[in-house]
Length: 508
View (cartoon, rainbow, N blue to C red):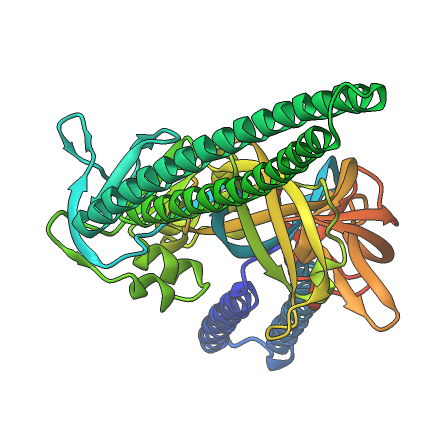
């Protein structure tokens, strides 16, 4: 039986020393007693001294032999003690194993996402603006209250108006001028009709005179009338012809009068339309069915028409400056700007998830990962697709604009809101996946450490990577499903290192 007590050798030595001392003391005492007994016998019996020396020699030999046996026993015990201690120490030392984390390669869905922040807009957006200055006198009522953001409006609905008295007076004046012009045109047309009648009468008279002239010519040739009578009829024909010419000229004059009157009517109509347009500039009328996205006016406030002009083309500035903005809630769009290398994988038709920044701000503040935010976007956001990818770089940012539209799942989007956008650029439902931390990239290639369950060692193996997903990375070659790879501690192991797996990870 092995002695595992490190103090066993010292205890044995001590016990042996005590036994030796006790034995020596016993031998000395026994020898002293024997010598005393011999002396007494010699004195009492007077025997020969040579006979008495034999027992003394015998006990000295016994003592010497006992001492030798005792020393031999002590030496043997010491030999065993020193022989056992290295074995115990050797058995107590075991090989050192490096603690690591590991995960099994699993077959799951691999998706690569391109992320960016964008701005929500509307394909059908109408910015309504007063084109005249004036005090806001009217804002439509919805359920007994003033119009507000989020209210539904309809095409042709009057939403608001400013002071329109000047425009109303201008419309009245234009309508009066138009009525005068119409009357003048009617008079010109009447004059034309009269001239046309006069022309008809003149032509009739001419025809009659020409008939009379022919009759008188026949009578003159027969000698029934004098030449003077024939000449009178001839003069009447000439006068009738002149009357026809005059009547024809009167028609031309009348026609010019009609055209002039018609032009006056058209001019009056144009002035009336202009005044009506000016009147419409005092009103905000919804051109589409939609919802109110922004409203920046109140009754009694003075509106300056230059306010919106100074806002420029920036959507945020326009939204803050425009009196009312109406949008079609079914035609949202989100625009993002990607770096050229990221945009290289973007294609029209790819799926995109969009969520307003405010809807994930709380989760982001608590340390949510990009993957966690994507899950929120899938659950509470909107799903659309890539509608357009600009072929040119933006002049300032040198980025590529990408437009997201066609939302088949629409939730919580708001025009002008800032949004997080994820575009799926690659997908494989049967990918061999491992955690991202398993890779060891080098100049010679990408490696992983595969755990050999039988030996407890790791094997450094080169792999070919595929889709980089949020939950791991796809391995195209080098690892089979079910093999276990080191995930934490990759930089501390080499090929053949003994490892101890202290925790398991999963590819979700």
